[in-house]
Image (cartoon, rainbow, N blue to C red; front, side, top):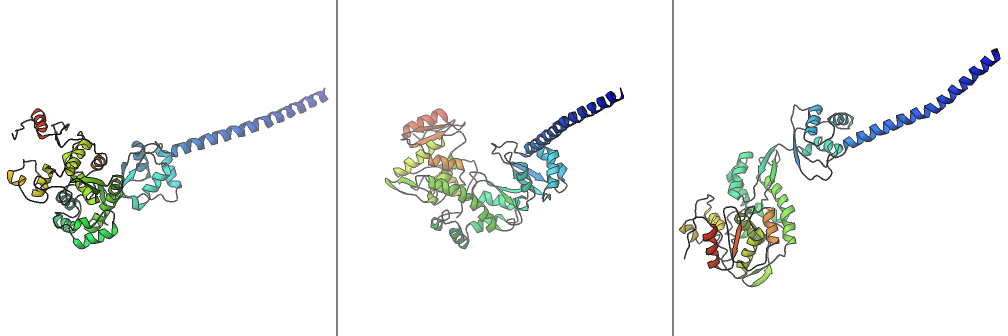
Length: 379
């Protein structure tokens, strides 16, 4: 009996050992799977919220913000998937010093990229912005500059007309700034050349007009020069097809900018202007007369202004004015590049911005009586 009892005990020990050997790998496997799942999920939380997004989101870091506040606000703006993981990530990173300022972020950035932006001083913007709006002109921009910088409007205007400075810019931006600006009839040398966008104001440009202008021209160079190169670069002017300069390109785009609206057929209007240039017909555009008079109110033009011999008055002078009359936007360059080919020489827009085109002045008058409230016929 004693021997049987001992044998049974040995058999039980052997079975228990066998079970232990079977269970241990299972436990280890389960732990590995759990760790892999945790790591995989953690990695997922560090990836971009939306890889396909191209939207730029402004994110501000204030002096009082710590990593917890930054993480929470990033999550609220939909820029990261986990505020908790961002806090951990910031403590593990080689640099967790967040800089104060405005930052441009996107949902297509992963957590590491966002961290790099927020901890890089060169990415921090002051939060003060010079906003150049499409259709703005030099006097209006100068007034804006005075409000957000230490540069007076007079100093800014003096700098955009500074011959020595313009000559420097010709060397720095040879494809953009050309000898066309030497025309003595140009009212403001850099009119049309300051691309509409928001420009950060900081210590580097707050008191230096040259630095600010160069900053803006870099954007113009990046946008307008490619648009010009992608155009035909040939127009028929007075019956002769010839290469046009980038100055002429910007000049007509600036007129188109002032004539067009958001709903107008801009390509069709561009076609009208090109048709008029082709037959050597005055462009007869009101915005050029306002610019000639340096009057930018909505008051109707006077007979004296319409009869002015100022080179910018396209009712009196043939062809393009000496230079641009406003800052053209991308839509104006695109409309110019995609100008509709037609036989129209006239156009008008109603109060909703819809365009109506005509081949003859009689047709134009008829359309005006139908679609322009209060129109008085000249016949």
